[in-house]
Image 1 (cartoon, helix red, strand yellow):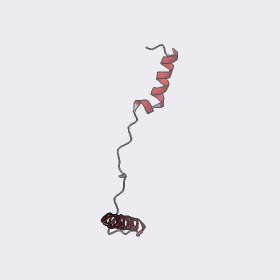
Image 2 (cartoon, helix red, strand yellow):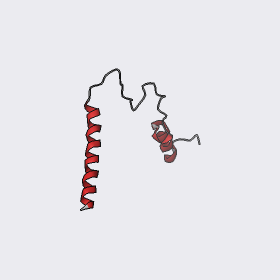
Image 3 (spheres, one colour):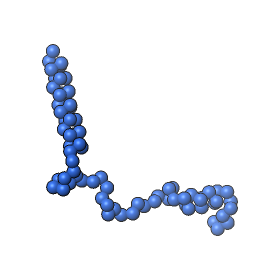
Image 4 (cartoon, one colour):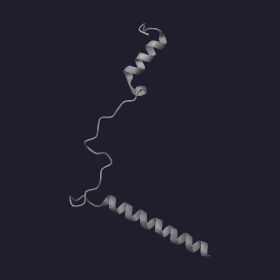
Amino acid sequence: MPYLLVALVVTAIVVLLAWRGLGTADEGQNDNNPRPTLRPKNRAPRVVAPDDDPDFLGEIDRKLRGEDKSG
């Protein structure tokens, strides 16, 4: 019986926290309480890693095929 009571209390707490979380997402945006954004608007440009750069990958592909004689 005590386990059932603990389970009910924990379930009620989880439901309450979820309800409050959903309630803040549904409220209208006002200027007095702005929500933080996930991405700042003035971010530094994204750096492309060498394995994501199409020019780098094309150069490696040419070297593997033997088309590039530069080295």
